[in-house]
Length: 256
Image (cartoon, rainbow, N blue to C red; front, top):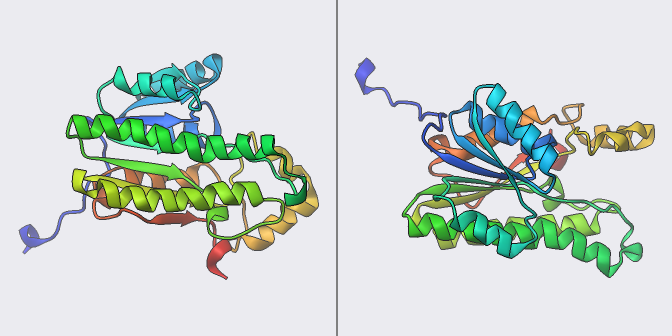
C-alpha cells in the first residue's frame, strides 16, 4: 500500500536559475535568499552596485549560489543585454517597484510616469526578455510578479499604486494564456503591508499603523519571511498546475 501513495512534489530548485529584480534589500533580498536556500543559482539585480554586491555576498555566505548584476530595469536595452548574454532562467521574480502615496488631485505626470514605468512597463519588458530566452532554449519556467493587495482593492492616496498593481494582475493573466504552450507559468504574489527598511518609517505614525493593523485581520504587519514560502511554492514543481492566478498574502485584508 505504501508504494501506491502519491508523492509530494519537491520544493527544491536544484539546477534551476532564478533572476530577482530589486534584490538589494527588503522583499527582493528575501526572495533571493529563498530561491538560493532551495538550491537555485540566483542572479540578484538592482541599480546600486554596493548594495547588490553586499546582498549577493550575504547569500553566498549563507551557502547559496549567487551573482550580483548592477542593472536599472527601466533601461530596456541593458535589460535585453542582461538576458541575451546569459543562459535562460527558469524563474523570474519581478520585484522592483516604487510607490508615491498622493491624493489623486495632487499627482503630477512625473509621479505617474515614475510609478507606472517601473511597476508596470519595466516588469512587462523584463518578463518579455526572460521569456524570449526561455522559448529559444525550450526552458519551462515560472514568472512571479510581486503585486499588492492594492491590486485587488483601492486605498486612500494610492491611486497610482493601485493603477499599476491592478494592471500587473491583468498582465500576468494574459501572460499565462500566451505562455502555457511553452510550459511557462505566470502568477502574482499580492502582499499586504510588509515591514522593510523602506516601509518602516511610515509605521512610526501611530495613526497610520493603527489603521493598517485594523485591516490586517491576523493583527500584525507582514514580514519578508511571509513571502518567501509563497515564492518558493510558485517557483517550482509544487505549483506545476498553477498559472494565471494571484496568491494573496494579506493577513485577511481583502477577505471582507
